[in-house]
Length: 534
Image (cartoon, rainbow, N blue to C red; front, top):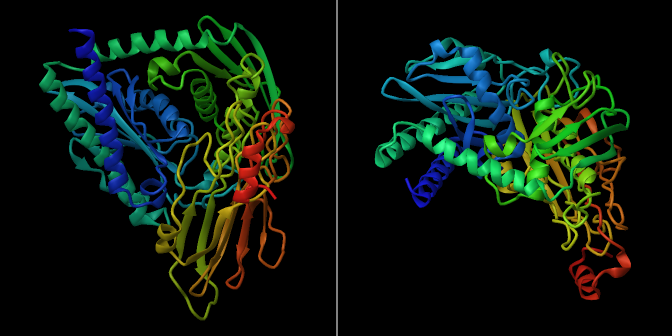
């Protein structure tokens, strides 16, 4: 077949996984999926190698899902993979790093021959246990752990597994509905793929996957030549749960790829901020690709040149049964950590540090009075601070980097449960000054309503350790969290927001880039006009 013909088929494959992801968004029960896009979707060859992924999705889902499908193949066993099957797991070490993400894989057969898989991942609102927060001391406390099992076998739903899930989560309809949505999205992909193969007279994915992998590998290695072979190091400090942590990386660049070693990183925590190594690898790989080869597709061949290692017992290499519920809080810093290392070689490409971790709002709404019992409600909202300034552009305001998730709208959040979002506005003076200004954080004020209080799980960072500027730029503003009466609120752990109180979150800003004295006077004047700086 011609090069043009192959490219057309590749583009069709990408459109299929985009439709797969859109099906998940349309069928999802949780706002984290349908509003924020906290998901991933992709197609894999018969050996479990990712051929294409949907643009919709987050690195923490996409890149860990790419590593998850071989686990499905191994654990189910090739002899037990049948047409009509659907498999499921939320195992942190075989999936995306914590229990709140469900991954579903569906085999694709053409006739009696296995030709590939579709897989998808989504964050669900609850998995039981202690809830979505960092307070558990073991993964056993954090919720229901589903090993790789058959959700559907030969077209028959596993009612026993459905019952186990329903009986162990607080929002049974939402969670089971989201798993069905994941399976439905894979089924959409399966049907579209078979129709495509029929149209192009292909027996399977083998021919197309070879075409995709060969070209992607060559382009990825070509892009990495922009960083000279050598060893690059960086470290950074982040808040942790109850004490400042050090994250350290040594990146070795060779003709074959990049290897990140996290020796020197602080030990694992007693609380659920630990990060499985697969999640750290996902954000290392993403950071390198977005800095050096942002135009390349994400598949097995583009991910393969990036490898990681870490000593046992460090916080970026959590092992069972370490608690990992909010692994994103530390894991999201891996991108800035690794970018900071290669900034020594490519200062023209690497931004200053940003807010990094999402400031997720996770609350269990409960009756404020025993005399007026009300049904419990689980609430979740994603929020972002500012990104670091770039060498030639200001940082982005209230933008999730590196996760890329959107926030839920105030209106959608208020429809889910007893919550009022009183204020959601840009936070002045939060971006670090520089030739390019850091992105601004935001101020969010929320409170319970209708006779409820919030049992609130805080999972915030950069309260003690703000984002650092680069090349002479100033640090971004640190975050802050407190009640509307001025009562301090811990940045991590379960606390209560009373029925008559509001929680105020001041999200951190990104660091600046370059000497502030070199800033364009027109840009400075515009910042003052817009109220970005005072």
